[in-house]
Image (cartoon, rainbow, N blue to C red; front, side, top):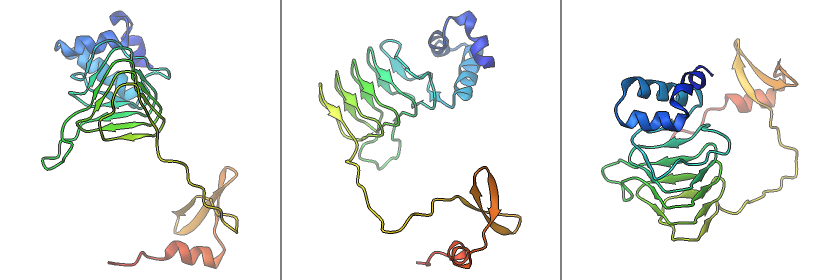
Length: 190
């Protein structure tokens, strides 16, 4: 909230990012504060041909340094456009996105991949290979596994030297011995 008020003299967060590139220490500091408040990290040295569209704001977006983004890109929340810097990695490098790329929420684009123009990347897709122009990338098909018994999806936690579970806003002590035994089982050692 504070950073949003402080960037007003710069016009927009995007103007502030551009001023960060030129080396202004105050602009870099303020840009970093804005990203911190939005749980984002868009490297000041990542390059954009034009300002991207963030439909939900700059929320939980990570774009590494050296990444290149084309004109008119739409980037939703929780997207990662990340470099691979491991010396022995096959895809060492940074992503390059073409023009008019639409990146759905939660998508990950990693390594030295080239995304063509007019590409649509679906929500939660993981992209690690080049994508030609005019394509759609989707995540794996949803798989449903039916169970015969109801699943116990309560959240269990060790608190004050006892096992508890969360139910309707409060924690309750676990009294079922089978559940306690299963919670205390150690994984098999290798």
